Amino acid sequence: MSLLPIEKGADNPILRRKAAKVPEVTKAIKKLIKGMRETVKAEDGAGLAAPQVGQSLQLCLALVEGKMTVLINPEITWRSEETATEEEGCLSLPGIQVAVTRPAAIAVKYLNENGLPEERKLSDFSARTAQHETDHLKGVLLVDYLTPPPQRDPEQTQEARHEAA
Image 1 (cartoon, rainbow, N blue to C red):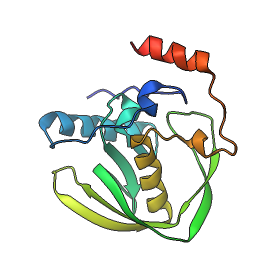
Image 2: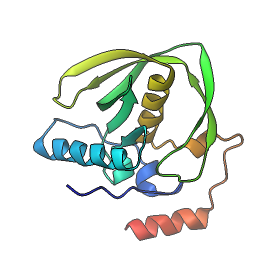
Image 3: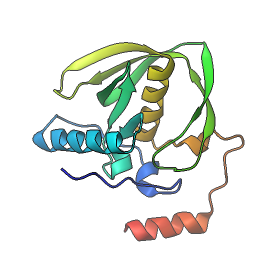
Image 4: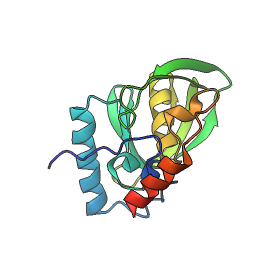
């Protein structure tokens, strides 16, 4: 399988769209997961969300406890009051690092790559990567955590929509 092209840019329409739920784990979904695994490994990333490879689906990979873990239709069900601020980067926004404050621990429920439900409590780096990747599924990018958020140029956004059509 070849590597999947990574969607880039803060105004890229597919990266700004709320992703659709995955109704079931099919052969096509498993093929997508395989391509995403190969791509994130080649890019030396800590995670990758389906919208980043042009698929507006609630599916992501996140480095959890040292293992690249598939999260399908993930839902964060609990967030700790304790927070931590760390620099984050993103394969879709090369060269940009943003200090992001996130809950230090979370609980997340999701379907695994076999379509079976799981729920895990994550902390530290594992919690951060899972939150970063689930942000992608809601159309949220690192630059949205800047204070104040950058103003998007309406003309650039319009051009991006036109190019996507």
